Length: 408
Ligand code: GLA
Image (tube, rainbow, N blue to C red; front, side):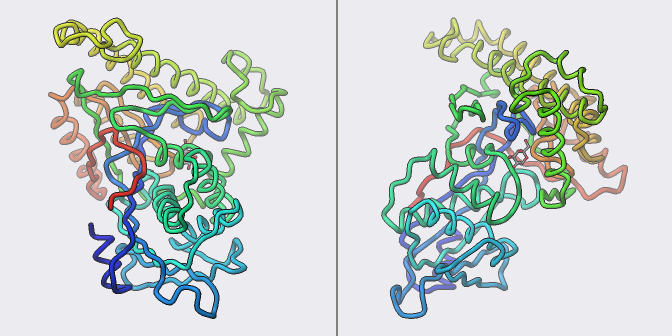
């Protein structure tokens, strides 16, 4: 509860509550969200914590303010005047919580004069959605302080608006959805066109498999223009194909009609990744214990009998992960050298599959391996980085966790 102790140190007194919003890893569907496609993220155990309280002297002259501090930015306390707040007025990390306050008010939810202390165990720039976690933790805190009960679907829209319009990064809807709507033990299937979602049971451990998250320590930033460029290329590809978005293309052959080789490659990735999301979902749903599968609600002997099938399904999911990496590297061109090396080393050491996750140009790799090979995979990646004199990678556990919630 380090956010609460930071609150006491900086603001004096006890916070009114502490809220946690997780980061995410994405099992499948990259750069598909802003193309109205499918994504399949899961929430991480790591996240951003916000300890918050109504400011002492709230209501006094001088207007409402949001006062922010963060354990990761120890030298600053940022005061954001709330009256007349507009995009462009706040920069740096504080733009995310300030943007949430702005978007909440724009949606008609009042934001009180509040103090918020932030802490995080998510590495920043690792492509694990620390920005969305910061937005969502602040959002839960501010709406609770105001006594507003906002539906989760609306919280997603408001947090995304904060990022798109206040911070100015043209991201899709995946990260905020993952942080606010995931369930432990599940991946979240989200249709980014209809915003319909489904919880898909996801428990690699039950099949003798394990997930390994590798922060390649090459910092990723979405604000450098490449992300926006990819997005514009996808929109142009859809326009030339005469469809509202690339989601409408289900036959991969259609993409080959594009004359421009760059647009053709971009569209090829998006169409194939949408398809891969649905394939992974079908594989997960075929597993024993998944609702609708033959083993559902059966006893442990039935589950054991199904475990050979489960190993096969995870092998297949691994194959799809590696295929997605090749597509992100060659067709979408958003991978980076550390990710390619981590993926190759993981596969050579026995992983079933691996791929870069998130927006790209730095960040993390997700590997899926038989539990027995996990140490070998970790060692192989560490050695491959050491051979190149790269900063050692950081390994994080990746257990599908619950969405944002109040802790205290
Ligand atoms: C970033 C964005 C998401 C999504 C991914 C790529 O994480 O925030 O909206 O586009 O990149 O899948």
